[in-house]
Image 1 (cartoon, chains in turn cyan, green):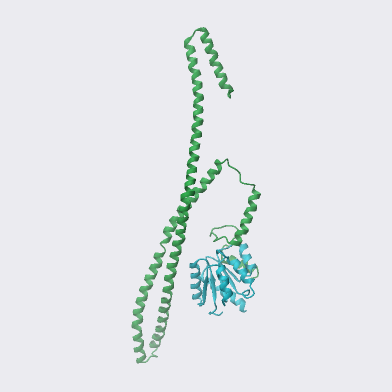
Image 2 (tube, helix red, strand yellow):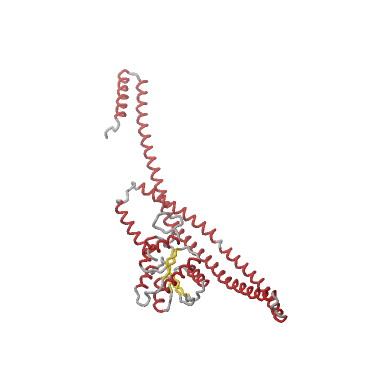
Length: 128
Length: 255
C-alpha cells in the first residue's frame, strides 16, 4: 500500500473528518484532503488525482450513496476505491451500497483498528 | 315540552291529586305539606340541571387550559427547545474540537519524547556493554541533561493538555440536563396531542392499509436519504448490530 496515496475524506461533521484524518496519519497516510458532502467532493475528485475516498452516507446536498453512484458512473473515476464510514446500519442499506459498488463498509462508532483493517483489505484485494 | 320521565310525571300527579283532596276537605296542613313536596321536586330538577351545566363548564375550562397549554408549547417552548438543542450541538462540537486540538498538539510531543528516549537508551546500552570510549561518553552525558530537562517540561505540557481534555468533558453535564428537559417537553406535547385527539371524538386514523403504504414509502425514502445513527438497543433484524454483522453480511454477498 502506497503511504503517499492521496485520500479524500468526505463527512459533513468537521470533528469526524478530523478524527479520520488523525487516524489516517497514525497509519502513515499524510496526504489527505477534506470535503463536507458529495457535492463538494465530486468536483474535487474530477479535478484532482485522488487514489482513495472515505465517505459518510448521511450528508446534506449529496449523500455518500449518491456520490458512490456518481463515481461508478464516471469514466475517469469508476475504478476509484470507496470506503463507506457511516452510522447507517440497516441491512437493506448495506446491501444497496454493496450493489452500488462500495469497496468497504464501516459502521460508526468505529475503532482505529477497524479503519486500518478495512483499508488494508481494500488495497490487498486491489493489488492482489 | 313533554315529560321525559314517567316517574317524575306520576310523582307530580300524585302530589296534585292529594293537594286537590286536601283542598276539597279544607285541610290546610296537608295542602301546605303537599305544596312543599311539589316545590321540592321542582328544586331537585333545577339541581340536576345546574349539575349538568357545572360539568359542561368544567370540561370547557379543562379543554381551554389544554388549548392554552398546547398553544404555549407550540409558540414558546418548542422554539425554545430548538434553540436549546442547537446549543447542545454547538457545545458538543466545541468540546470535540478542544479535545482534538489538544490531542493533535500532544501527539507529536509524545512521539518526540519516545524517539529521544529510544536513541538515548541505545547509546546507554552501548556504554553498559563498554563499547563507548571516553569522548563518546562525554558527548552522551552532555545530551542526557537537556533531554531530562526537556522531558520534565514535556511531562508538564502533557499533564496540562490532559487536564484540558478532562475539562472539555464538562459539556456532558449541561447537554445532558438540556436534553432531559427537551425529552420532558416532548412527552408533555405527546400527551397533549393524545388528549386533543380524544376530545376531538377519538377520530380514527385513516384505514390501516393506507397507513401501511405510507410507512413503506417513507421507509424507502429514508433508506436513500439515511436514517441517522441506530440506537444501541434498537431491536429487529433489519439493523446490523455491529461491525461483525456488517462483515458477515458483506461476505455473504461475496465481499
